[in-house]
Structures are given as structure tokens and as C-alpha cells.
Image (cartoon, rainbow, N blue to C red; front, side):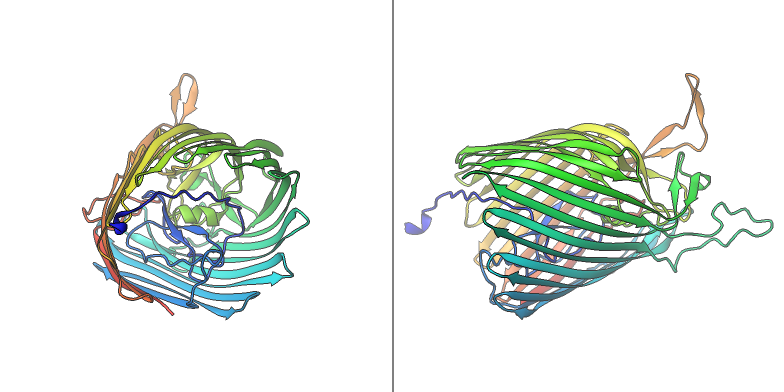
Length: 560
């Protein structure tokens, strides 16, 4: 009888933002499916999460959080292979130095896909290698540093059908010092990033010669270097409150590149010289935390350097109430500016035009509200909604700029979203969850973060544990109303104004049925099998490349 006893336990914790530890690199588009959350690498000393590209079958994440539990294993090796043509994942890491005050981690990862769709064979290959260090300094300070390199190779949809290839290189490096002294928390950090297109496989146009019209006079792949600094301090002003200020300064150097204008055809791309833009953000704030409430009042003050309006202010306000064990309420107002680096756009979709660079975006305000019920008898319910306005938000359009690939357009966009999530876990044999989110899907009326302008986003998952070491998962994800827009090449007269007519271009609905199973053979070894898009539904990534049809993967995860 004692085995049938169970009780719901709610654990409240304060989450303090910090520099992300080494984690798996996002290498494929994230716009086709709703986000999947994955844990950090095995050797991380913090409980952190990172977005994993939810294209199709990927390796299960490995995670250990040293503040909760110290793993007896110093390394891991994950391997998966699948088809119908080729899918391959390899992820490995090892803690080279594992001392009380020093931890040095080496990690690497490869992801590859080869599949045939619309009569064309498509290829994706990415490879990453990284090194991370954490060093305790004194009794209350720590030094963290990391460097990683990622190479990418992707096939792109060409103008006349078929494909061409595009290569990328990315370098990230950072170092930060954080600590606490006499009620004062501080952090100082320096970061560097490089991202560039390197395209030996492009059908590069030759310089203009007699009798040949070439609007480009040769092709210039875009490349960027970013240098940034972070400073922050927080001082206790009472038992439950403190004041603080954060400063972040980023300077982005862009080499020769093209800037596109309406209606986004070859003659509408202008070659630009190298230039440097910057964004300095100062965020003063006051916070008060009690057992039942959390209050943060602050402002995001942005100073633009060589990129439009000089000063912009956005709110940074949060109020949360969790006075009852089964009821919580959260209200947020936020905003801010974004540099729109090539690296950040690549993370949304790698199938973009490699010659173009873009200007920053700014969000004057956004509002989010959430009400959560539970847990009660294993069940939870969450209702949420929001409204946001974003200026010069980059949204995809279909363009005709050499050598093809997706194009981003700056759009002043505003819109709302609403949705709900429900879940139930009996704690023993099964768990079930479902969610829905709705938003407008028009040219300038949409939720700012839905780059594919999805109108309906739904997901459901059932996990069954028939025996102690076996978990079977059945899932379904849906994104409906996905679309981008295309301009006509010529203007028409509308009420005395010359207007380029807009045409809505469907990206197809994502209807992804998933089935997988994992078996923990030992504490060290887990075996898995996973299949996605089992219905074989056709849809397109941002950039015009078709999504892979039904596919599957088998593999193993080993800790040592």
C-alpha cells in the first residue's frame, strides 16, 4: 500500500541570468516547428538550457547540473544514424581537468542530413569544436572563458529550380569574471564573434566585360565581426530588495555587402562599403522578492551608434504573484533593440542570401501575461497571452537577388498572441501534455517572433513507461497559416501612389507526427530509436527549401 502513496511538491527557486555554458550549437532552422528545449552538455556546471534545432530526429540531450548533483562521469559520446538516405549525429565531450576550483571541458559535435525532395538531393553538414574553462577565484568569485568554431555547409534552392551550395564559418570567444562582496554582486565580460559566408560552390558572376550586363560586378559574400563588453552590478538595499544596473556594448563591423530595397530583385541590391555599427544598452532596475511576490521595475535604454535614431527607451518590468501553492500569475512589459547580426539570422534559417546584411530592429514595447494552475493531483494548466509592437522587424520575403536564397525585409509589425498549455503526469506509468497558440498571420499584423507568420501552433505528447527502463513517446506538432510575401516587379497606381503589389506565398503547414523510444540499458548506456514527419507532409523552410519527408534514426548515448 505504501507504494501507492504520492504527493505533489512545488519547488520555488530564483533563476539568476548568467553567461551560458558550453551547449549544443543550433545549426538548422527553428521556424518549422515549435521550440524544443534541450539541456546543456554533460560537463556543464550550471543548470542551463539551449534551443535545439527541431527539424527532425536529433540525439537526446545529456545534462548534469553540478549545483544539484555532481556526475560521476567525465565524458559522454552520443551517436545516431538514420535515413532514408542519410542522417548522422555525433556529439562528444570530456572534462579534461576536473578539480575543485578548475574545470576544463572539450566538446565537439557533427550533424548531417542528406535527403531527396522535389526531385533534388539536399545536403546539410555542420561541425563544431569548443573548449570551456571555469576557474574559482578566491571564495566568492569565478572566471569563465570559452572558444568554439563551427563550419556549416547547406544546399540552397536556386532560381531556375535545383540547388547550389553555401558555406559558413563561425567563431565565438568570451571571458567573464563574476563574484560577490559585502552584499554587492558584480560581473564583467568581454566577447568576440565572427560569422561569414565562404562560398566556393557559388555560381559566382564575373566582373563586367564588354557586351555583358552584370549588376554586381562580381559577388561579395557578407562577413561580420562583433566585439562586445558587459558590465553589471547589484547592491542589496534590504532583506528582500536590491538595486542594480547592467551595461552591454556591442560593435559590429560588416565587410562589403549588399543592401536590398523594394521590390527585392537584382537591380534593387546596392553594393555597400565596410561599416561599423554599435548598440550600447543601459538597464537600471529595482527588484524586490518575497515568499509570495517578485517585482522588478527597470528600463532598457539603448544608444545606437551609426544606425538610425540615437536613443530609444523600452520598459523592463515584471510582477509575479505565487501566494498559493496551486496558483501563480505573471505580468511582464519589455522591449529593446537588436543588431540583427548575420549569425542570429542564420540561426533562424541557414537558407538565406549570403550577400546581404541588415539594419537593427527595435521593439518599443511588448506585454505578456500568464496564469498557471497546479500542480494538483498531477495536473497543470497554463493560460497566456501578449501584445507587441516591433519597428523594422526582419520578416522573410521571396526575392530575386543573386545568387538566390531567402531575403529579410524590415517591417513595422504589431500583433497579439494567446494560448494554453495543459499537462498530466501520474508519476509512474504515463504523462500527457498539449498546447495551442494563436496569432494573426498578415504582412504587418503578426506575432513578432513568428518569422513564418504561423497562425496556429499546436503540440501534443504522450509518454508511456511500460517497464522501469523503457520510455515510449508519441508526439505531434502543427504549424498552420505559415507564409511569407513577394512583391511584384512593377508598380501600380493606387490613389495616386505608385505601389508594389504584395502576393502571399504559402510555406505549407507543418504536420509532424513523431514516434520514439528510449531504453536505459545501464546507468552509462541508453539506446534510442526515433522517427519524425511520419505522415510525410510537405512544407518549406524560410528560404524556399523543402522539408525532409518521413525519416528515422537509431543510436546510443554513452557516459564514461
